Length: 249
Image (cartoon, rainbow, N blue to C red; front, top):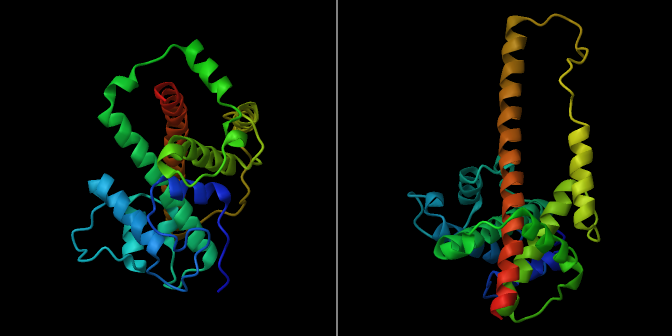
């Protein structure tokens, strides 16, 4: 299998998280699990989030079965993988997901241990801070000083994930994000019932199957919605964290 090159933003985020090895950093050459990077990410996540612990695990090595359990515990759609042989694109998506979740867990842990930083700010001050941080994605430069660059790397990673989820380019600004979100909201159904696409009358068995499909889609949508809300919240929180780190320095 051909290894996929990781983006600069993902590599920076992995370094900022404190990954102690160079294995699979810029690209993963593993033909199968275990992968040292995925194993390290899973250990870090389980350390920060006890609810992700698997009582049946006897080792920290991450194989396909353990990966499915971890992703399922995190309500990730990636848990639906059916093959034990993971393609490079799947491994890359799983890595980016675990990196973003570990960034989130680190930020939330920092907030819990520093409650004095969670004081509410008025709307005008928050808007001024957001305006000042618009260009952080262009200003961030990769560095080997992982500890010094950690706040900027985490903000960069969350910003890139947000842009990808909205289908925007890396050069997009905060105004572009606001416009895209507003555009998508405007295109939501206005409450009117659309004409049915399916004309024939369904049998009882067919209706049962339709309801099953609908339930699966609802659960998947709910999961994706919660992930999006969570990432929006963490992105806003990381702005405040980065600004306070600058003041401290």
